[in-house]
Image (cartoon, rainbow, N blue to C red):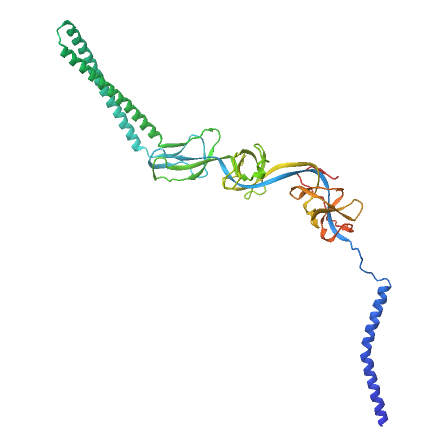
Length: 409
């Protein structure tokens, strides 16, 4: 019986030991199979992977160099309409934004006092003329009396004293006539002044160019206000044409000249640039900024450009013809040297070419170097080096700018 129990116990221990050893054996077999499978032809990692890149054609053509300046718009002409006389504003005939023709009436000042002053000046003139006429008649009588006294004195009838008295009376009458003549002249001048002042009650907008209308930019008074002489009433500006003002440093001063074309962009109309022409360049630099003022005239036929708007002025300062042009994305720096990766026609191997960068315009740049033909890598340069194999993405496309005429080399 004891032998039987001992035999059953040994059997259970053997089964338990085999159950724990089975998974370990399976793991070892699996590892051996994986090892054998790798040696029997399973794919291994390639030593030289193929890098995916995007390319663009290297082109030859012309490219323009531009300078961009920031500035603002100003009215090409601006003046303030002021009252030449004091008085109450009777009516304002125009308002902000209204178009004004040359010589148009814009403000009327109450003229009642000036009409009265005119009548007073006319009356003073009539009185002065009447006094002059009376003095002239008396002078005529005195002259005749002087002639008679002189004749009697020659005949010995009149004494020398009588002759002196007549001559003195004549001189007095002549002096009085001269004074009254001056008073008449003054009265006429006062009447003329009163007429002019009465005319100033109607305020006109007057400027030299009688062909183009202008616009009311500001209104300073309202009806019923009492103003003094020379009080500003309105500000009138010319918007067609309009001027763009910007300042240039010394290094760009020599590249600008009068008559040069300028393209201007505004935030209000970003998709519709305007074209202008440099009209004036200051001959001196400002002491504070060491920059020179440049004025650009813009026709502004639509009238949408307004004084005070900010503008960005693009000025073409140079043109390079028959040069190699690549996208700016193609330029990379390796070991402090700028260059590009080129894919030769018929191959899928990239070659490094060091280049010198020239004019840049938009998304393209001029480069100079040796053996610059084929296609240039514009995306994926970080994955390649000289001699790397590449796969070219189907999204690769030609990069061109509409303002340059180019052809593939």
